[in-house]
Length: 255
Image (tube, rainbow, N blue to C red; front, side, top):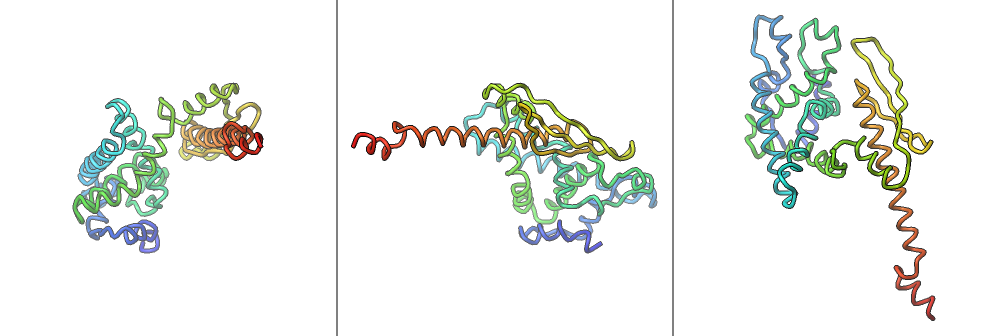
């Protein structure tokens, strides 16, 4: 198990965040495993605690970082990063799935990669960090993981999702609305989807996920970034060519 823990443990070591060994084990104990092993304690109480810790740290960060945003915008930003899908992606990035202690039924149905189980485990681990090192260490961990996600969400459109943002940038650029090419693979209990966003006949980077919505969101994000970067580059090139926006060129033109 030590090898499986390495990625998560490495992050804790880098951040200087301690983790009590017993709390760590408890945070990884799903109720299905507990049921099959004599009703031992589960991670559900730690999950409850971690959910509250995560919420207050992210909420404070939003409040202090965006002083001009109204309550509604702040609430949407928080919902965009504190949700089961995002928490599960965090868990996958830290390779927590193989470490979660599951009952046989969950193991056979791919429980180690289920969004709900991974999201709950992430919150339980935050709760364990809080109990081990207090709010200070919990904040270090949460800020490291979630601050970049907040920044990413803030770049989205009013709807706070990449598909809406892509529609907005297409409308502004005079492009037709995007479409999506979808491929799926895997058995029914473990489907995988790959999506490609198509704008004006151009296919952009693919997105993947356990459902179509997740795959399309990732593909839309890549297309949005590419189209926005191209528009900014074109705007900059236009400025460089315009003597009125380049004092040096303007001086040369009047010399």
